[in-house]
Length: 173
Length: 148
Image (cartoon, rainbow over all chains, first blue to last red; front, side, top):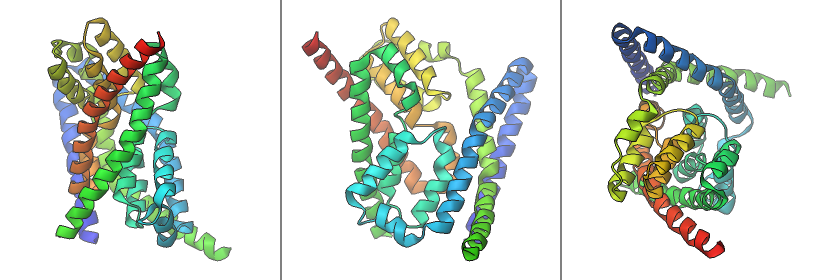
């Protein structure tokens, strides 16, 4: 497990070095735009930092007060309708870029949450409540309502498919 | 109660270590987002479409997966594409894949969830962007015709 963790760290540092290298090369090709890209990155960081803080507290809370038993009960094999409800509406209500939520979702997975529910959560995130009025103004109310409905159904169906595929893969191992 | 406080301290430290271990990858992804936001312009996305429904739908899904930014950007680009005669199927697929797929965050997803989960989720999301785009456009035109 520790080796896996170290490997994860190593991959992260390699990836960061590649990105820094890319910035270096781009700076020589197009200095002005590269500085703009750096500014954009800083903008992303400013957006993400407060959400990351929320995720940090949620993860700490989760690890302190919620044990494997209760995760299994609410998001595990026997969670049923309640599990899907939590995954879909949690996804709709969650804020910020999806990758911010990955560590917390992986913690839930480790504690017994179903893969299908995690996939459904991530897909339901495509409904962005604060942006719905803008979507209505661009594409109309009918389109927005229909798309929202199909995304919720799609997240549920995708979760079922993903769960089945992942279960089959686990059985084969 | 003190036991819980002690546990909270321990888990906070553990959580901090988890976040610390993914921090380099997280910063790398943010760096890539900055590059894509600056160097991949909406004009570039416009240029790849040619008004053939299936071709455009597949391309739109891929373009959405490669693009990054706030969701409203996909509505603005989608609106412009519609004005230029690109099909609603393609525009819907673009809007969906813009928020559900992310090529540049795949390394992070891979390192946290593992290869199998990442591949299954992304392939399904690609497929569902196309299916949902098709169903949404058909249903919307049916309902618009019914209510008008």
